Structure formats: C-alpha cells, structure tokens
Image 1 (cartoon, rainbow, N blue to C red):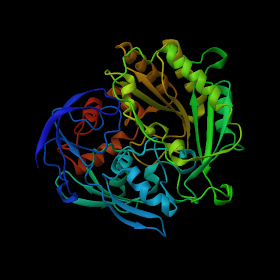
Image 2: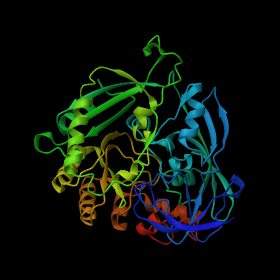
Image 3: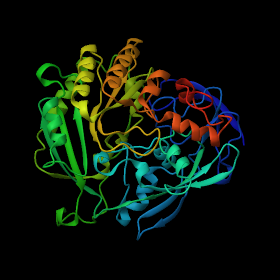
Length: 451
C-alpha cells in the first residue's frame, strides 16, 4: 500500500511530528507491515498517543463497516474505524444508545477500546471496556485472535486501555443500552464553591444516570471551585410532551466551524473570566428539569467544527487527572489553587465522579474524581505548572489520562499505573519485538524491555 510522510498531531495540535501514513481500504489490509506501527482512528486523542515520529501510522478511518446489529438484544459488531457518530445514526432511531460515551462522537470504536473511554455515567456503569463482549485483534506476526472477557482474557484486559500497543483492533462487539427517546431530561444545580459542588456530586437525592460538573477555573478565594452540576437521564416516554412528535428525532443545531487560528492572546484571564461569569449566571437559572437532545448534552463542542483552532497555532494541552476517593476533595482543591494561582486560564474545566476501578490493566479510571482542563500553550512555563500538578496528583494517589497526555514523565507514569508490570508481561508475550509503538509509548518507556 502507498505511504505518505507528513506532519501530524493530535487534537491538541501539540506536539507536531513527522510520520509515515498508510491508509488501508479494507479490513483484510490491516496488518503491521513496518518495524514500528501504531493504529490511528479519528485523531481525537489530544497528545502523542496516535503519533509515531519517524515511524508508521496506520489510518483505520476507512475500515468502518457496521457488520451485525441485533436490534432485539442490543448487540453491535463493527469494524474499529467506525465512529460513534456513524453508530448513533443507526442505533438511536431503533431505541438503543451507547453504553458509555466520551465528550465527542467523532471518535473511532477502536479508539474507545484502546483508551477505555469513560463518560458522565462512570460512577454507575463503568467505562467502555466494561460493555465490550469481544475484540478481534491483529497481532505483531500478522495472526488474528479473538479476545473476550472469558477467552484470551489476559490479552483482552491488556488491550482495553492499552493505547493500541498490544495489536491492531480490527473489530469490536459490544452491548448497547435501551432508550425510549432521543431526548435527555436534565437538571442543573449551582454551587457557590468547591465544597458545595462536591456535596451535589455526592448527594443521592439529585444524582442521576449521567452527572458532570462545569467549573469556573478562575474563581478564587471563597468562590474557588464554583460551578454547575448537570444531572440527566434518557427521557422516558411519559416524560415527553404530547406535541413532541417522533420520540427518536431531535432537531440538530447547525454546525459552525472556526475558520482560522485565533491569535494567542485571545484566550486570556480577562476573556475567559468574562465568559465564565456569563456562563455561570446563565446556567444557574436552569433550576427546573428541562428537555434537550442528546447531542447538546453529550457533545456540545461537536457543534463547532475545528474548535481546537480557538487555542491558536501553538495548540493546547488537555490535562486530565483522577485523584483517589479518600482524599479527592483535598486533591482537587490543591489542583485548583495551583491553577488559579498561576493565572493560566482554562477555557474548559470539568469535574466528574468515578466509580470502581476498571479491569483494564492500563485503564485510567479509579474510584475518585476526575478533573479535565484545557490549557493553551503560551510559553514553557505551562509545562512547569503541569509538573506541579503531577506532584499533587501523585500525593493524592491519582493518575493522568494517557489519551489526553502530551508530556508526562516515565517515572510519573510508573508511579501512577501500578499494574504496568503485569501489562508488560502480556505485551512482551504477543509483541516480543515491540512493533506496536507510538511516540507516547517511547516517551514513557512503555513496552519492549522497559520495566
């Protein structure tokens, strides 16, 4: 197959690296025909997880067929290049929904498995891997193997959350959840500070199937951590107004696109502070339950094409971490204090509650709270700040999300992921030459003879 050498980045547009691209047209063409190769779906991981500097990147976007859909049992088998958007177009009108979804539907199914993505319902229903029934995996020697939670289970749980480093994910079979409409019933709960926000997230009286909190990242003092807890569930038939029309059709907002890179100074403490104040005042008024489509609730940023251009040519880092349950409040508070003290604005700050740790050996979630921040790259001082945030995360028994990472150190990775040695044993057994590698894996010393 023809290849092309080009500059490539993740969604954060940092780093930018020279990679050799190969785009198979069919499932049969998926094979590791290079000494160093990593699969890439839609390129929506933020850092260097789907980059392979001076190596090969296998683009799976055209290997995207939906192969089998059992509309009675809610089981779907599809090629790994299929996007969640393509899947939703088929399943939602038939009364089914994704068991877990990240904050964008423009990601590949294989990427959801490789990163073991989580959503707003993790505290109730775990991460994506918990709903996967089977994976067809292409190994380093070209052989193909089917893994399930029962058969080849070790390889299955090394692949779920394994960042594509055990093999090429070719097909995925997973379980869907039933819905009675394509609408969401949502209620907002305003919090004046971080303590109130934690109380909302821990309150069973207002908790819902899906819960997430937006935070004002620039709030300080008594307002530190102020935000809005957004709780919702798939609207039942009896919750829909009589004039709703078809329960499974929603009016989609017309997508707009950012046509060019904003100048680096556009996102600053003043502009983001003004936006945060406006947004808080707007959303705190939604004190009564309201109906909305699933797109605005799950995928608000998908309505804006190329929104990563908002951060300018230098790009941005999305820093997402989780701190463990026993000291979660203190850990999140320390992170916010360090961030607000730095006067480095985060256009987006999201807090979610996690449930039990997943079974994937390198999966990110653990019992606790996860904080996600979008931080524009203005100067090298940002990376000094992120190192400080890493120290706080480690002090509180947490870890950084590899699918969002662009600069974590190898030592911090090993401290954050205690099951790495177990994962490495399985990796070396199926890929002894370490053919599946990425810029992320080499930066963190993952795979090969690294211990």
